[in-house]
Length: 306
Picture 1 (tube, rainbow, N blue to C red):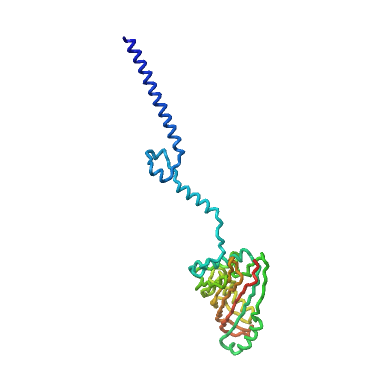
Picture 2: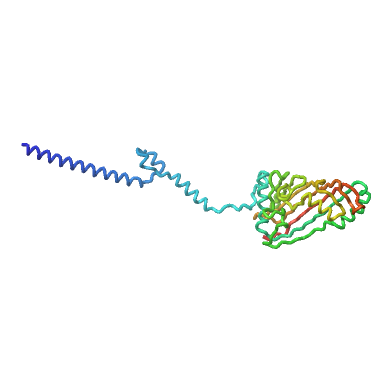
């Protein structure tokens, strides 16, 4: 009997072992199936409908994210808009935006160096004296007119030729570096298919090169240089420390075609110079006086060859 019971027990153990092994095999297959399921991609709607009991092991693929990434990639390969093309609503932009575009097209000439013709006109309009010297003002004016007639000087630049000193500011780095605080106003007006942009510069005293209102858009002279030019061109001596020069009526305008190229331009300013305790004449014949001078500077640009 014990042998029969032992045999039955052994058979039961074998059957139990088989069941266990079968169950383990099934679990392994289930695990394999779970591993395979991670390669299934759900849309956002499907994933929401079915639910997810094990969010840590099964990550749904968000098609929305994939779409955004694809769109971003496509956008990155799109050609950027030409920054020089004039906006259709240029005259409706803010003053700062119009000035930014103005600087951009002016500096394009500085960088790309199209050929162009510059006409420069520098003239002392008047040179007046106080005291005894005023009695011979007529004679002095005649001398000044002969020395400084203000005749236009034409200067031609070939395409690709260096244009420093021949285009707007004398800076080696830019043609215009105007800032909002440098200007009184800016206006943009349509002229057929072109745009005419005009800037008016704030007046200032004793400006410096490249870092003043006028110095950022034009070729200027400092107080010391202006006094030196008056001394060179007239029998006058004076101390720059006793002088003041006021820049006013500063302006610049450009005409831009539909391709964002300047085809015509001009800039300029007026200067009033005041020299106190100056002397006119030579040696013992010199006479003390105060001097006031009005100088005009104008530049025009045309015949652009891009």
